[in-house]
Image 1 (cartoon, rainbow, N blue to C red):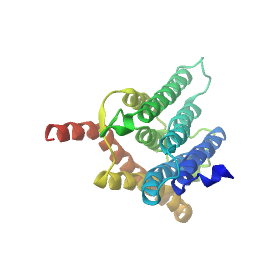
Image 2 (cartoon, rainbow, N blue to C red):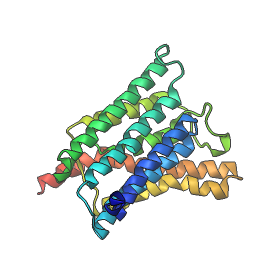
Image 3 (cartoon, rainbow, N blue to C red):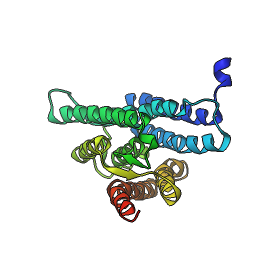
Length: 255
């Protein structure tokens, strides 16, 4: 009973983040990739809300940062790594694509955990992020998988809007995300208009799941709408990935 007395409202959102990430993993194991990515996107919404809720309603303890990193490790390190591996491994160890997908998954998981640990160990006190934030890396990987991932053995065609399966592109994005997470490159923290832009990107990425309920009977319209919304979300994410360090450098030069 004492444990629940120490749970704050913000903690519920943080825990929901980790729980949704775990459920996404179970969907990945069942090769329900579209549903899994939707759950990862939902976990990102929980991750974005928990800090606001904690500031708004306060906290009953000082473990919020640790709890947040644990949940993030499930949703933004392990789940994206498993997604890439599950989509592209065929015969691990015997095929180039299978070996590359395993290496990419390990890189995403290892650097994601390192990035989250570095942030919890004191990085949160800095005025900027050191290395690409794990949620941003996960969003980049998930959106790329939605547009260029594998459809083999996945959901029925009516729920899939992959433009074209392009394994090398997804793996390249995975390795790039890993490199950026482990790097010392400075990224701006998400405040003000950046928070609005990032929220819009996640919302756009989630729109296909909402539109699917109404447009699934019109396959051409559903695919066109889903690809457009996901493509815009990916473009917004790329602006942060490549433009964020430039923005941070310019801000420092004028500071």
